Image (cartoon, rainbow, N blue to C red):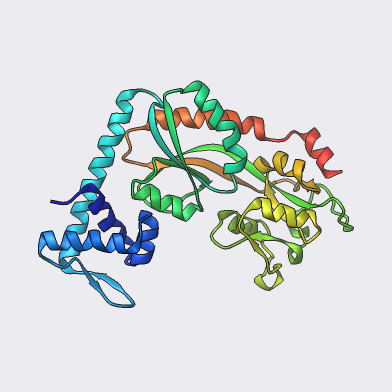
Amino acid sequence: MFSVRQMRYFDILATTLHFRKAAEVARISQPALSAQIAEMETRLGVTLFERTRRSVVLTDMGRRLLPRIQSILDEIRALEDLASEKRGILRGRLRLGIIPTIAPYLLPMLIPDLHRQYPDLTIELREAVTSKLVEDLRLGDLDALIAALPIDGDGTASLPLFRDRFLIATSSNDTDILSSPMTQENVAVERLLLLEEGHCLRDQALAVCTTVKQRQLVNYGATSLATLLQMVSHGMGLTLIPEIAVRTEASRNNVRIISFADPEPAREIGLIWRKQSKRRDDFQALAAAIKDCSRRLMISKKELSELAA
């Protein structure tokens, strides 16, 4: 009666209860989404959503239909996972999400490694903030994602990949003398530049600098870590930089990198997937490849000493 695509659109709209947001998640136009929902309603002969200019509400029939459609979609995902499992380790398509503060540093090393080790693997990548990736994972649009742990939400499993410690980046021409190692209490929060809201690195930076107050923050929210480092390079402030990004960003920006005193603040990076997925062997193989790359991306004490000079 319904296509799988229509059921997915119904699930997304029932979750967001907003046509514009649902269309963005589904990656189709709002009129196209409305047409697919209207076709479902016509085939059923009932209304699934009550629509007003300001709200979308599930009808009684819509609420009764939702768990059944979600169950069908879960079964379809399980069948897709089973088919992938039968093909062998890391063969066929793998849809992988990754957060922006990891992607540009890990992927240039990881993707060639995976192509060499698993030539029959086709990787589809999606870069987005954690909340968006988790939603895509739940809806079955991703097979797995790489992000900072822990992840909010039920129905997921994870494997820890590596510890990514935080360091301070400041301009090489900065007249302020910053001692190394630095304590979290000594961070000049009034000069701290952060990513815009929605990025988990922003929240992690605020957690590290526990004394920070919103009124003390520099009124600048960047959309990428690379942009932040350019601003730092020009003396506009300082920022936290994850270790995985240090080698790349320090080579192209005029910055000093300063470590924290023990216990050094850090984030735990993990691989996350749906619990019901049958591709655990794939994810374990992928995790092993990521761990190998991460070991090569971490910086040595000698390198850090040179970067702090």
